[in-house]
Length: 376
Image 1 (cartoon, helix red, strand yellow):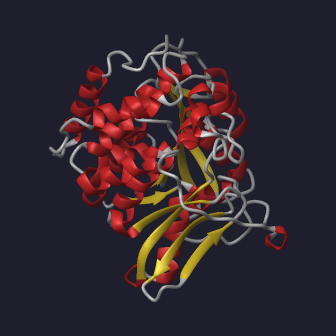
Image 2 (spheres, rainbow, N blue to C red):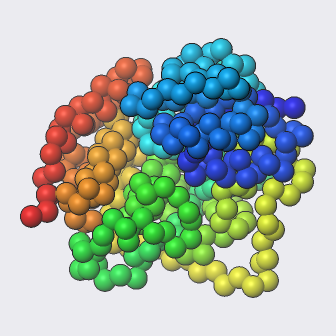
């Protein structure tokens, strides 16, 4: 029996994990979980799945009392006190960074769905994992696919990585109409069912930019050996190009239960975890991204080349700009304008520890105290 802690139990990753674990309750037991809001839903899940520990990370919530579930208010304390074999970090956004470092220090394996941990933590995250002998297993569908392909093909035989992107809901929208897109339209992803922030990032391809940076740190490929292609069907999750020129692809339905359960059951998944792919009815297309439509992708490659603190700025500035867009303070096209303004500054100094990372994050927040492209 594998004991697992799920961080972000009420989010999209947590929901998919519960769906997958339901078929493997003979193999996986959730011993602890966390939520930021939706406390009532989290408690219901704990009672339904017999989860004995719940950490409520938001200080704004009224802490309930429950005789069947122990309530924690400090995530570090819970991860230290509740032994487990693996932590699934499904926390959304930059708040997942500290949780990843804490999981590395307290557990043998980290199933990482929080891409921001890699983008913000960079080399420091993997240095910490090496120190504590903690394995990091990627859960993003693209990076899970690459991890599997590199294992099967042999890292030494692979020349480059090919990351697929759906292109979001506006891949055919005239560019001069993008400024008029609403938050509701941007959050309505045509393929994946996700939270509003990641859905908006998927529409601008800022999310794909984060994945380019993540792939660089996870697998050690430089910007010249990572490629992004638009693949609207979201069936091919990533590919690798061998040194011989051959391309190998990983294919499955667009369902997060596959990469989540690959991580939770690692290294062997010996029975189905979801609906199998019927490849006989597929019509797959691929094309290069238009950087005029998707400037975030070009910015991400620039951040990989420059390193320093540029990836941190890319991540944090985007989080803030997306929140402004959701509040209707800036236009859809203003998201990139705000991020680009910050990236034009000098961020060449690389952080030397987690405190440095947090300091850069705070500096970005201070510099973005108000929108420069505020709608009138």
